[in-house]
Length: 224
Image (tube, rainbow, N blue to C red; front, side):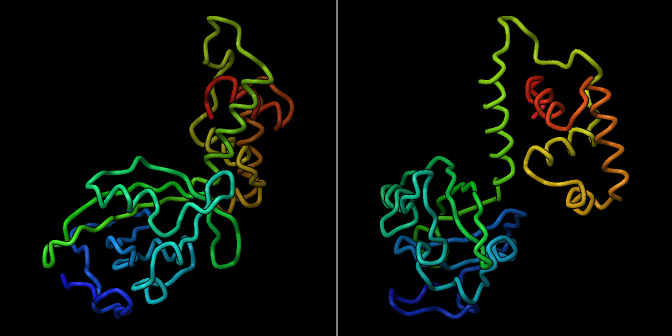
């Protein structure tokens, strides 16, 4: 690995430290304690639309620009993650709101690791992040359903009828996340007719007559 150029000098992609033994399907980038990006992965580009050459050498808050649930700037100079890292402390995983290159909002969950860059012994902060936009929608729906229909004390969380199959449950979760049948067919690489058949089968198993009732029943059963 090579040392990063001094602050204010933007390194070339070929100069960046390379995490040769680490691969991940999550987005990945590393920063030094000056918050300059030294490593940027292909999954990070796929998720955010920002290329490696556009990210490396820039300060992370200028690239990510994430905000918290109150729409306050989380990614900033001396952010909590880097402030903790300067004290040798880790940071618990967190969600931030970002936008991809097309301006579409995303909610990403970020985990961080501290490591020492071998050549320079400089402390680096590795960020691993994944898109949790749909997952958080499902969690909010399940929480809302619990509030609308509070369970009786001692009630079990299993379905009274036959539980949905694994594929049916996958489709229910996608519906709960706001996807429509044609998009679900594309995501799962099946035909729209197959998706509709799975939806019908899930409704029969749960003893309901509509997609909304199906999602509510699945949420009440603790399946979402």
